[in-house]
Image (cartoon, rainbow, N blue to C red):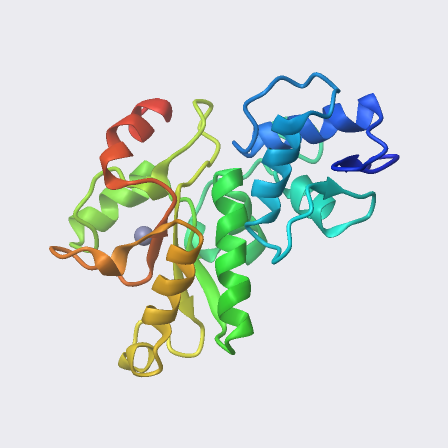
Length: 232
Ligand SMILES: [Zn+2]
C-alpha cells in the first residue's frame, strides 16, 4: 500500500490517502469510524493509539514511506483467493515460517506480537513463534495427548471461510526451547512482561494450568464468543 502524501495530524490529508489509512486501521480493529476520507480527531486518536504499540513518541501522522505506513500495511489482510493468495493453510502449522505464522494471527494481535518479539530481541533473547494458528483438528490431537486442556483454544480462531485468524501465539527462545535453561535465563518472565506491556494475557499467570510460552490477545472469558465467530 502506498499513499501520495502524509495523513493525520498536520498532514496533507488527500481524500484517497485518508480513506486508505482509515480502512487499514479498521482492518486492524484500531478505528471504528467510517472510511470517510476526512481526517478528523477520531482518526488522529486512532493513529496515535496504533503508533503507541510500536513507537515511543506517537505523533498521529502517517508519512509516505514511513514506519507507521509499513506497520499499517501489515494490517492489510492477505488475499484469500486468486493469484498470490496465501492459500495453503494445511499441514503442521508449527513447521511454517515465522512470516507465515505471523500472517496466521488476527491483524491487530499480530502488531502486538511483533512488538513483544522486538522487545525480547532488544533484550538479547532469540524469540521464535512455535504456534500461531493451529487447526481445530490439531488442537483436538494436542488435547488427546494431554498437551492442552482445551478442545478449542484461541490458537484455533479463524475466519468463517476457514482461513487463520489466531488470537494466541506460543513463543520460545530458540536456544532453550522448553528446557530448564529458558527459566534459568529468565526468558519466560521476560516474555510475560513484554506481553503484558502490550496489554496481552500471559499463560504463565494461570494458576491451574500455567502455560509459560503462551500469549493471547483476548481474555479467557471471550473464548466461547471467539469460537462462535470462527463458525466452529
Ligand atoms: Zn498457546
